[in-house]
Image 1 (cartoon, rainbow, N blue to C red):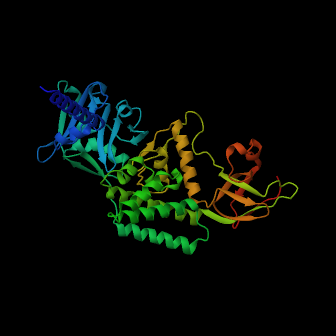
Image 2: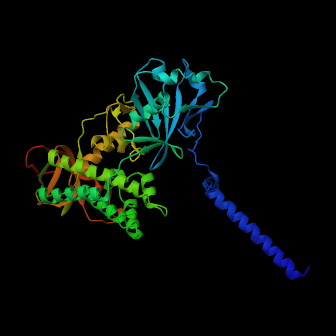
Length: 457
């Protein structure tokens, strides 16, 4: 063999090895790729951490087994498994519901504990499910799976805890994805009509619009216009960039979900149904906040009028913070829960769930709560700040000595601080004394046409 032939052979072998290596790397980076190519038309079966897991299937009219979840045979108490995991799919992906019947089985309380990351819930429940309790679940020691007819009473009992926790979901069984939570979404024209009504009310009834509310209304309108022009992907890309670089409170509540943002903004096929679902919730949020502005806020003046010998700067920065009456105990172990329901758009943050309840964006039948925890205290505080800042025109603003500022604020008491304003200079050029408040105190914003004047430090 000639030297040139050997060189060509080594080159071909090396190239072939490189191609195999490259293919292998792609497989590692996308492990679902190969699985999807060979996957049968069947509901996915995620893994659980149960020590003795028994899979649950529902048998459809076509005699197909649809995977629902699992229970832990080792957790059996009084002939009934205490620990279950039920899997459900929504437009944002798959969700795992860990259902714990311990309190009910031990007669401690008439409720269930359900965990859906990141929140624990308590759901009112009268008694142990009758048909499941008579199915001898704990006696099937040799079985690794069990099946029930899709329309049986036992199947309805498996589903019931999720129906109580997620009342907005319309549940369906499909052979491809198993249990599905479907949410109604409006047409483009219905969302457009709602937004136009809100805009008209703002321009004709209000003489001072809150910044955050205007920002969310604008972003909602831009997203609606972008999905109406699917041929111009750059329009949607622009809206997605704005969302990505916005502060959390500048976004409508339904736009804050990272799962939702990925569905709408990433990939070749943008999820139009997910976008419309969030648009509907955004319009509902803005409507609720608009009513709250009209019912529970006041327009008035804030005046800074300090004698010249006490005023050392031309301008000052005023910061306002609402003074709250704690709704939840501030102890390390609060003993109070809060009304809570599960919704795919708001499930990633407890704060979002509380806001959705507060603004009537989700159905609340009073059957479920967020379990008391230290994190719930912070979530409630953040939710309260979100709502208050949404209906306030400005909570932080510049003002020169001798000037007045028109404000729209929710009725209540506020803590204020006054900081000497020297312009937007780099931090290293500003001393601690210059950013420390020169004055602070409390103001009341409760009387009709309030006019608050700071006359001295």
